[in-house]
Image (tube, rainbow, N blue to C red; front, side, top):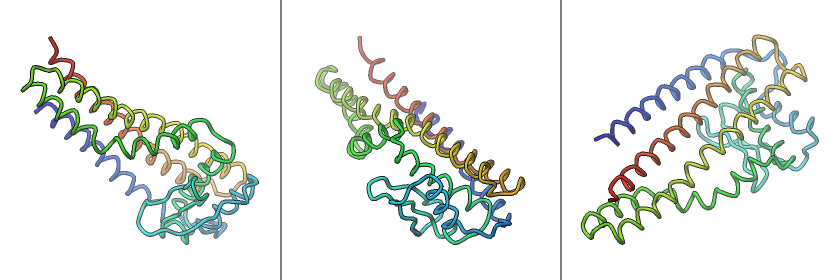
Length: 230
């Protein structure tokens, strides 16, 4: 019961933050850019200003599906960002280019996160099941074999938690780079800049909630495993 209360509470906070983020982007999508540039054009200019010539800006389907792919060096902008000319689109486009700049400059946190991607993709889906399975086996077999299975599950879960926390400086740094460029190059009016800044702050909070949730879940299951030991 305690676990579900914990997960429910975190899910509620996550929903509230996500909903607020959507509302912010909707609001700032109404602030049209004085310079008339689209998200694609904003991204291409930021890349050029940072001397990056080997990254392509492309459009992808979906909403809030924007991301930078270091594997094929593409800035992927959602349809609502790629062709739109507003403060929200400028914020997202510049943020994703912030990741491209991190990649070009070999930003250490981004390198570490990229190295963890293949590990987390394998371990995250099975970690909780290993812990639960280990606890069941431990209860039935005297906590021997099951205990070590549960420990393996906790180790796997810790990779996902570590990934979530490494993501924080990566995302905050990309936003800081984006805002510094937007302001330094006078790309936006004060009103447009304020909207872009606020939108990126709320986007960053979604990663913070995810990291806290991952840590809370890891600590809960760790207490279940180690709390059952004599």
